[in-house]
Length: 368
Ligand code: ADP
Ligand code: MG
Ligand code: MG
Image 1 (cartoon, rainbow, N blue to C red):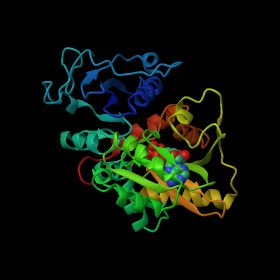
Image 2 (image 1 turned 30 degrees about the horizontal axis):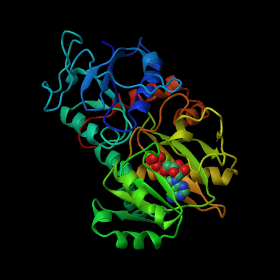
Image 3 (image 1 turned 120 degrees about the horizontal axis):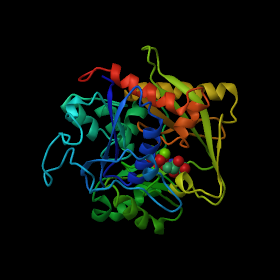
């Protein structure tokens, strides 16, 4: 029989809608002659449901954010308030989750991109697309990612970590630690994405509000020195099917007008006025381009990532390259950076989806 692919999307993160939109595109791109496709949605409160195989419903429309329908047709995997564990409703889909050949987890942010889902799939002995438990968890946690990257000699942005409750317990100690970075600073949920909960703070008196905003998404709050006037550069990395070294994509630069203070959620997803411009390939000389690609691949390997990742940098005017972050499940609509960078490198969207599923099918489960 054809390999059965469960496309899992939605989830308990603030990037729920983005994930739904991505799933819509992937469902459309997967070759149904080659794969049996099962769309599985996770609602915002964690219910697993079989979704309609309807890409249109999942698109981000004008002012409309898609959401998994929690009243979906069947419980696939319920939490302790729900019932069944790891079983597809046989009336709707013949088989159990164990009979799925590969899971394509199109989930961004905590509870999906962070190793939690990957752990569940390891436990169930099911193959899946992308990074494993550890690399997913480390990449999602901007604090631990910095520890790994700086430990392996990659330059990262200076930061201070506000542990859960630290702000409430000793505000002046936090203020002092942040002041020593020098303003402006970026205040972020340590585990998050899509710029959600991130604020650029220019004055000490605005710090508290930003910390509270970040803490609403993650009690662990990361404060970074702002890298002023740097260019934002991104590079895709893809594992090879022949077991050779991972490949780097064409390099892209994100440029935005003064309408945006930084590359925030609006700039990323809702910029209808075209104030955000993607330069692909980035206007860099050959040497700088090669350096970005080389660091991207080495960072991918340093993290122990698998399958795919998008590696994001700040490039200073003096030529120094700072590693900002690695996203182990980057935005994946056809308009997202990662697929566009690969399209510019000769791998179109459908081929990219196919490549990832083939990688996952070849990868053994368990320790590797
Ligand atoms: P996310 O995982 O949500 O994308 P990032 O750390 O990439 O979080 O931050 C989102 C955006 O915020 C970046 O693309 C950049 O525009 C801006 N930003 C974040 N940190 C800094 C920093 N230290 N200096 C300058 N800009 C930053
Ligand atoms: Mg990110
Ligand atoms: Mg980012």
